[in-house]
Amino acid sequence: MNFYSPRDYLLLGGLLTFGLVVGWAFAAVGWGLAWAFGAWVVLQHLEYVRLRRWSERPLARPEFRTDAWQAAADALFRANRRQRQRSNQALTRLRQMRAVTEALPDAAVMLDASGRIDSFNPAARTIFHLTNRDVGIHIAELVRHPKLIEFLRTMKDEPVEFTSPLEEGLRLEVRRIPVAEDRSLLLVRNVTELNRLLSMRQDFVANVSHELRTPLTVILGYLETLQEETLDAEATEALVRRLVGPAQRMHALVQDLLLLTRLESSPSLMDDDRTPVGMRTVFQHVTRALEGLSDGHHEIVADVQSDAAVLGVANELESAVGNLLANAIRYSPNGGRIVLSWYDEGDAAVLSISDEGVGIASEHLHRLTERFYRVDLARSRVSGGTGLGLAIVKHVLKRHNTHLEIDSQLGKGSRFHCTFAPAQLRRPINSPSASAESQATRGKQP
Ligand code: ADP
Image (cartoon, rainbow, N blue to C red; front, top):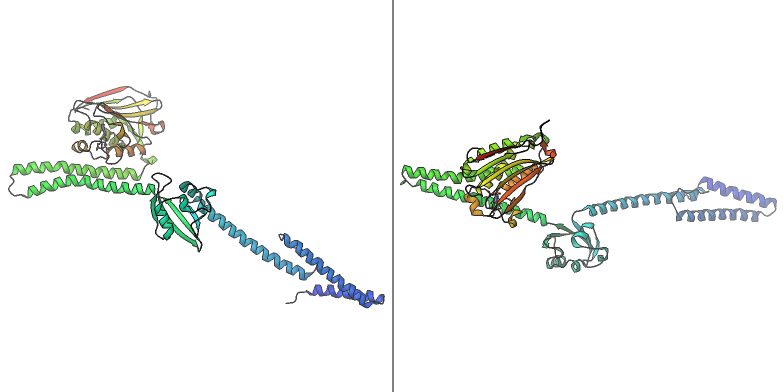
């Protein structure tokens, strides 16, 4: 490859010719040529100095007098620009990776070959209470758990699960991802909620199986007796009648389960689903439907003082009020007074169902809306409860943007109530916001 360009040779040639002519004129051709060559060397040196200076800050394209140096500097400039672009890309990728690990909900801790902390993300700060001062410290010195120590010693690929020694009840799942020969990434996931949901699901399946097995066993027992040919017509009829109770129980349980599943799968109402529902009508339907349960043994009073209608789903609201009234009947002694009321409280309206029944001890109150939670299992079964009533009420009210509140005193009675915000209500135009009306029903006459 030729380093000098024709222009450079022309310059060198020009200098030498000039030196030759001047030297010839002064009868010192040798000195003339030596001066011309010296000038060429000085020019090369100046170009070299220029290149050195430029190389300290090689950002802009350099300018040289000779093509040879210009070409060399241009090549350096292009190589340098390519290098800068590559390192910028690498930096961007590194920043993105960093942003990803920082946004990870799981804790990520980079360990060196001996298990010392190299770096970690914000989630690791929270889960393992790490600070910048912990870099360089062995992870097992900070999170002392035999399972983690064993896991780090054997460096198994399968994840390990243990309860955090740093926070009570916090279940952690740790897995290792080899990153390079001398680095590995410890990924730590908080599985407390997942474990809780799994055990809830197991409990739920066990509860449903148990609830269904009890009436099913009774039905099977009666059916076996019915197969005996010695039974007369009267005994057969009595047995068939006894089959109805457990069959109805199973039916009620399946119905409640289906309803609960439907409510849970869509926690909020669509605007199209909402229609104005009058609480007076709801009370009438519900008291009529539950006449049989009370069988005239309770004084059921419907007290409607508000003219507001709830924007919601009528059959869901009837199901909620029905479950609350059924409970009030089941857990009240004969002669007990039960009041269903609907009244204004400022711009809001309150739905309340109160009874003078057995009441509930305060330690049970926060768990009452859990599925299959019963204060008195035997009493609930005998009275035909499925254990799902208050769970249904909770979900219906949630879909109507309100929540159940319970006041109760053991041996004195209970009050189940909820408040509907103005946005959840429709009031008649030009109507007094509260038209007092009280309607009392005794026993079978709602
Ligand atoms: P159940 O079908 O057993 O009534 P619920 O979910 O409706 O199931 O109620 C859960 C538990 O709450 C009941 O088993 C009962 O112990 C208690 N409970 C509900 N309502 C009342 C009430 N009005 N008075 C006393 N206890 C009640």
